[in-house]
Image (cartoon, rainbow, N blue to C red; front, side, top):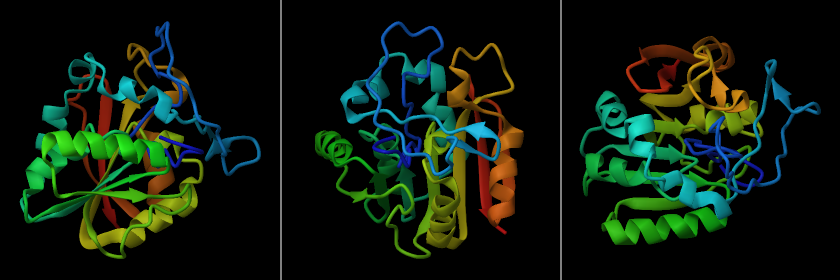
Length: 240
């Protein structure tokens, strides 16, 4: 995510997205981090630490050669089942690793609103989008408390490796909920905190139970859970 992170991926994502430090537990080189600004005085939310966010200076890490094998984005996007003509939102878009895939899925009649809190990340996104010819991607500059999305606009919001870095989870979740369409979905992808064999630093992992604990009291209902990714959960929520 970005400064101070929404993680927002975001804001990390969101998502995604994206680790404050390289989340690899065995990584010898870690990308730079942006200054964290967690909402809680002790840097926690609902009993878990808010991870610092990755700076745009480490954006190359988001398109590392190993990422496809570690995260299997093809399987993820099959599960998301995006349709032509939808408006979808990539929260914590970074340099567009997922936004460009989403743009192809929704086609020219659809739209991708690609949100990040770092203007520099959005410049990198624009370069990637231009190279891919993805004219239906719209960069959006968010803040740690507001993704600046239109009310009721999003058929799907995607946060990949982003949610755990949101500096202000409660107001951000409220804003994301407001931006969902009536039947919209919010998809949270996080490295599995329950699995000690996932070689990711603990602060960059979340358990399924923790994600549900944070979202369900804030107006969301778990509608889908998919554990077929190599290292991550996919948890899809709808509005309660």
